[in-house]
Length: 170
Ligand code: AR6
Image 1 (tube, rainbow, N blue to C red):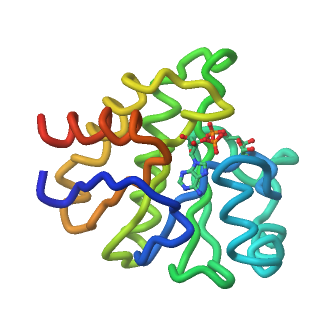
Image 2: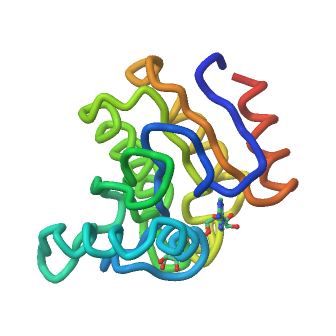
């Protein structure tokens, strides 16, 4: 598919308008890609996150997305989304689809021509990799987003192979 690409690498280095963070509902940092993004962006990102309004004590409920400035990162924006915790979400597939889709809708509203995604929920949140890739590619391949250049930054050769195969099959 023309606007989808999978690369192996560190998403904090992505030269795109927006990078997506696999965050948690508090949006105050964490481990994995969230930790890497906050370290690379510097304290400005945490300050920007704190400005995001709390709804019932959360900044970003599961499956939703929020946008902030990007601190010291090369991108203009960070789009924070929260994927499902696979073991406890009653509908993890739907929640993962929403996380990708809401991130792309925010990118579109903010006139982003390019976006980089990590493999949302594929680390600490435990989503099976093959199923996660199916959902990621299907959701991102929607015609609604065909004007956005979408790059997946995968952190292992295994993930890169899984994602690349599905992009080739599109
Ligand atoms: N660039 C690209 N991908 C990365 C990077 C990086 N720099 N670092 C890790 N990954 P995870 P989740 C990969 O656990 O499963 C956090 O603590 C990683 O190898 O970061 O959605 C949050 O605060 C894996 O393939 O996110 C939440 O509490 C993928 O990114 C929770 O973890 C996602 O793994 C979210 O869990």
